[in-house]
Image 1 (cartoon, rainbow, N blue to C red):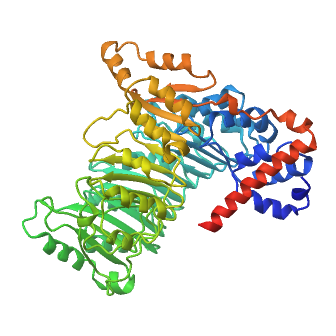
Image 2 (cartoon, rainbow, N blue to C red):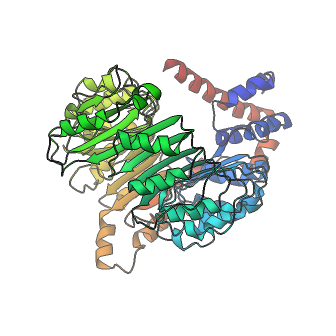
Image 3 (cartoon, rainbow, N blue to C red):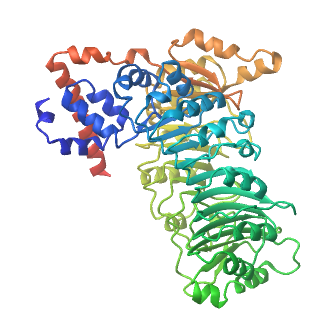
Length: 625
């Protein structure tokens, strides 16, 4: 205790940076008034993130620590992705959002039930400081979101809201047309998964008059579809666009103060002269233009390379090369019967990159070797699973150093490492293995990815037991639902034993798998000591569905009779064969908060000693890496 108390407050706050707020609550709340004040100071500038908690740790935090800190929390993140039912538990325990009186930012990830989502939003209406709302990765996907008449009105009613990210909502434009309340402050809005027409966009803008930044998807093909009013405050727009040239003309002419335009077109072909005319006529303030076009030329009776040359020539006028110095690059595959090509402005500025077997490239840049660093790309996909990077990358020179999600086929040749200069930021890997030798390369990828958290495996060469001979210090989430391509594989008792006995299995916290016998589910839960969420399909569950389709929860009830009642067992709201068990290991529970306060100083010293040991181990691992 004396060791920590001798440190200055500034140094303690620096130490706090190495841990999540959830961990700090369990380590320090209730020790003394000084540490409580330091925690409250930390909470005011750092989010309380409940996305990756075990069930027992969530119970500890919600019952013991959250009541003491709820009035100090400024940023809160809730998710059902790795903790199904968490949002419902919060509400049932009385932690309604109106109690978070200092809340400034709220992030909602993968909330299963739209009714719960709507209830949470409604409870936010009296929060005076809530400026940022993020709804991310909704699992409902249109099933009931369109039926909630007041859902968006509840959001538009939030008096302090300035930044609204609804990219997790999947709905049609009818949802946007339900808005009937003017938002007093929303200036940044993302609705990229709610496609709308220009008429619908007009309605949205009418009730969002202070909008400055917009991210959306627009499809406009009808003659009578048009924007109806000037949007003077809008400065930045990021859109996915499918429609006619007249529609795009109509859209841009009502946005005269746009300084930044990022646009991805869907089956739309506008050459450089067309874009030049649009910019010159309607966007006098434009300083940043970022374009990506995927175009099919199947009906054109000349070679694809000739088409590309003509397209690039239209981007080589003085407007492009001298006045603006904006350059473009094309990728294509000369043997593609559909004649698909991708054109984009340089440098490449989009989050995702899919080479899709396009191996030839040309650009308008005078120095062709420039602009090959794709530092904005966070997600890389190889295209169709039949193709490997051996072919896709034969002529590409793109370099990726900030990849977070990678989808790749193995084996690959040494050129892979010249493309991916660093895997230090890689957190998610989806790998398809086509030869047994691919597992050796997969181990090399593991060794180069110190932050890799999630692994999804698909293999064309079974069995996959060789995977469990590999090691990774960081992987905590494993998806084996589609472990063998082109066939459904259910793990039997021997397979489960190999998984349980492996290093990867021992450290796994979130597992998705197909199981042959339901009793093997109990083996996984009981013997994988770090497992906090199991998502599985069971072969006999599918058989039960086929025979007795009217009774869906036989397996759920069976599990409930064997697993502690504190665990939460549910079926996935969309994939009904997928059962989720959010595991509560009651034997691992920590004593309640009051016992910490009443314990002797030696007990407090033990708690702090454990924390310092964890800190030293964490710090040493950073130095080692």
